[in-house]
Length: 397
Image (cartoon, rainbow, N blue to C red; front, side, top):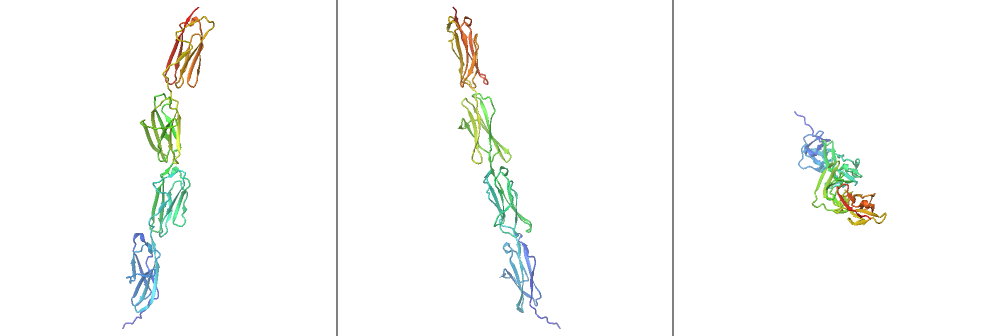
């Protein structure tokens, strides 16, 4: 004989199985509904957020959660076919780990644009909702202030009140991390281009003793800048076209930027008073370097002697008569040095802005007959030399 076991309805139920699942890995989740005692076999109904899951009537529920299932409530209802009005319900809340989509975004600067030295810059890093909430941190960001939280969103900001050239080509990275989500991390980075300088120019010549018609190399050099600079040349204050004159340029790295040199080979003339090169800095302001020129040049004509007509006859009849002999040389740079040698006299010399003069007083006496006055004009630095002379003819009493 077998004893009859009365049919019991369930009184309690629970859900077993892991509630934590990683959506990024398409992880499959299996939950089991565990009523206390149900005889004969129980029937099951599964729900998600109170909505019946069609076709799921077994004790176990297997599915692949997605990110939107985070915090969803999965419930099971267990009942006995003979006591359908007696049910037990168990529930579990899902904890679905998922990473943000898209990954972090850095705003505030858009390569390949540039920022000028001295301007402010604020970079903002934000990330979309995720579970768990990502932590954000910055790396790189040379010269920028510490993190500040961005209100109203998952984000952090870095600020530079005045961008400096040391930040040129610096890479600023924002890293989002979820340690609990299988150590997930993602990075967003921007490389900052800073335009700066140059602060100054230098101008040099390969010859400090410039003589008219010489070919002189003038080299204009910039301090570091970004981007490299272009030069404009000026002569006597006006813009001078380089034209077909030989020009050589070099560019090289220097600290955070580049330096640029340009050499202009030109034939100098006596009309060259100043030479300058200019460029513009990152603020659009002119940067200029001037060079005053002192071009040496000569005159075609030699010195001219006045005060006596060469070869003319003079008489010693007048007592104490003197001839005022003057030797003049006009023009040239520098003005020449004058030497006047006359018989029985001590010459004097002088110079004005455009003329060199040597003079002497010569007494009219028979001893100067057939004697010469010789004037020599010599220019320092050019090798130029000219000479003029007169011959005295004196009639004696």
